[in-house]
Length: 137
Picture: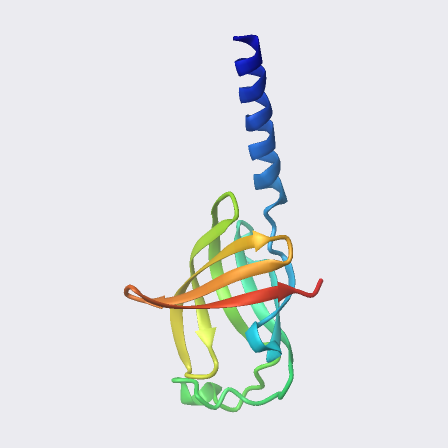
């Protein structure tokens, strides 16, 4: 009985350690190496994650944006992820992601595969597209 109790305590401690290590804050290379996105706490919502493009292989303006007034802005410096909420473990959900390639915004979630790999999803209804992002720093 004592061994089972010890095993349960160790498992609980390790599970807490895994949650504590789940931290996607940093700079990530998007799939295909087209851009780098810095994930940080959102300014007005410290328990939520936001992401901004900090580098692009081929910098360009936001020409596909639905808002005509924003089509002349540079994509570097543009927020593309916002309001991701930590759901426990390595999952963040209920956020949004902007796709400059089509000018649309999608429901988003991310899952930390390991310390250097994220699975990032953008969804409309039940149709989702995923990308794998790699940590740069």
